[in-house]
Amino acid sequence: MLEVIATQLSHVLAVQNTGAGRIELCSAIGADGLTPSAGLIEKSVALSQLPIMVMIRPREGDFVYADSEIEVMKSDIAWAKKCGAAGVVLGVLNHDQTVDIRTLRTLVQLAYPMEVTFHRAFDVCIEPQQALEAIISAGCTRILSSGQERNCIEGKKMLMRMAEWAEDRIIIMPGAGIHPDTIAQIQDAAFPEYHMSGLLRFQPEGKQSEFFGGQYQSDLEKIKQTVARLEH
Image (cartoon, rainbow, N blue to C red; front, side, top):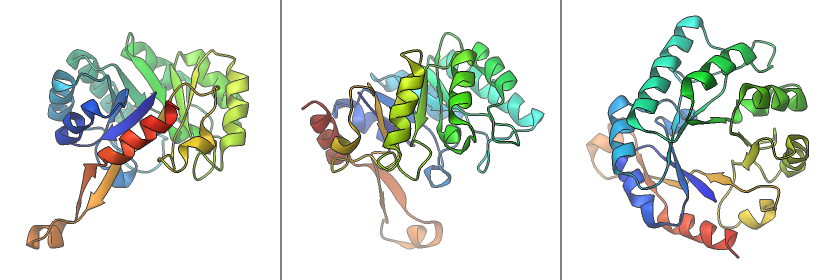
C-alpha cells in the first residue's frame, strides 16, 4: 500500500484514482510538513474516499515541544478526530533525542480510536531499538522512517532490523526517496506500507510567482507508476 502527501485540497482530489491507499495531509512541505489548517482538514476528510492522516506538527524545527505547543497539538488532534480523520502523524522527543513517552502516551490516548503514525522524528533518536519499544508501548500504529539515513534506500538495513524488532507489533513504513525508479530497491515483505511525497514543484508565470514562489502539484504519473511497480 502506498501513502502519498497532499498539501492542498486539489491534491486530495487529484490522487483519489491513482491507486494510492492513503493520504498524509500537511502544510508547508518545504519545512517537512506542518499541521494543515482547520478548513483544509475538514474539507479534505469530507471529500476524500481515501483515509486521511493529519500531520500534527505546530512549528518547524526540532521535535522538543514546550507545554504550550503540546496544548496546541492536543487541540489539533481533537479537531482532526471531530472531522473524522483516519489518524494523525506526529512525533515528540526529549532534549537527549529519546522519545518523550509521557507526552506521546497522552497524545495517543487523546487520538483514540484514530491511528497514530510516529513520523521521522524517529530517525534522529540515539537508541533506535529503545525508541521503537517506547513508541510501541505508547500505542502507535506505525513508524514512518528512512532507517536513520538521508533516504530509505540507504537506510534499508536499519529498516529491516526495525521490522525484526517490531515482531508484527507495529507497522514499519519506509519513506524518503521513494519513486518509481527506487521502489524495487526498498520493497520487501517486511514492509506492508510505503510513503512517498508524490508532489512536483512548479513555477507559474507572472509577478505573483516571482514575488512569492512556486507551488506544488500531485505528480499523478509517478504515483501511478510507483503503485504499479509495488503490485508486480
